[in-house]
Length: 420
Image (cartoon, rainbow, N blue to C red; front, side):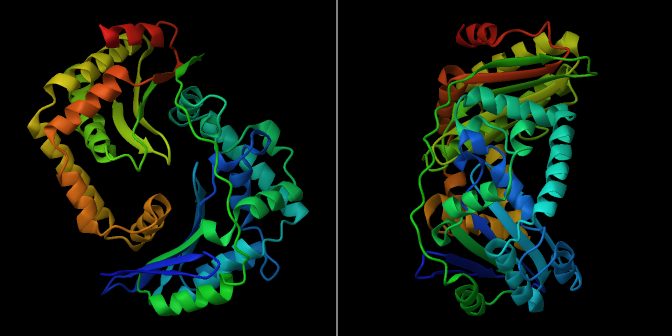
């Protein structure tokens, strides 16, 4: 399988990967504009815009957009993250031109009908309400806010209700005008696709867009802090975060291996010690997330209020230990899990299309799979112990608590335990 890349004169990029034997294809456009590109008064607009893309264009009504893809057995969706907004479809190979036309239509010619804006406003407000009713969802927004206060990365993707209630057509059009430029767009497709044909269609559909330089978002700074929200819930929810490498940092693979060994599986440190040996929780995990200029290793667990203190203290103790006694077997197992997860995931055209778009966003190229696997395999025990020391012992920290958490230790107390 070969990755092909074409850049149109206006900067619009087209990347594809033909997968022999596949009958279907995944195709979409990744726009390098998400929640971190919003000003404070715009918080939530990127997500609102994603919703409005499906609410009609100059050529198609909302129903016609849905029917166009579903009449051929495909499906279409979108998502907004802090750094990108993606619009994508999965169809049979012969329907790729149709899917590309629909995706281009919703991106280039959204109607932004006032009636549909009001309808979708209500949907998004319901989504916000649902998030607030989901403790193991909302706690990560609060954690993000503590990690990056007064910065776009610290704001919720959905936006606050007060902002969402005020957005109108000029707000949507303004965000598109500022950020939806061809140089900020990547058309990525994988599966039963022909690169030359897709590049030619992209030229017709996107080639007339004027190229413009995009303004860089403000640099992030992980500051840390604590927030706790006491509420009468069945479980107390605990989320702890530490600054970790950004995705162009050469230590990123070591950080990911460390997070996997720490809490990425049933055999991981935290799962074995806190759930299996002590029975303090049902769910506990660790993961390493990364952005363009910062990263965040996150630990989450849910437990009863009277066990929260013990769980938090043991978590910090395990973190401290990893800098000294992480074993070669743990590192080898984590590397194998990462490698297998990557390779298994890439059996899906959708995952391949997303990977190519993300790689272009991060590095401006799509590194061969062998190169990425090589980086994972090259992580040593010493690399992991060093990153464990950097993260577990020295990195700034943030904490969010939700539920019956009155007896939970403070972040300051955990920091003292961490430094002991």
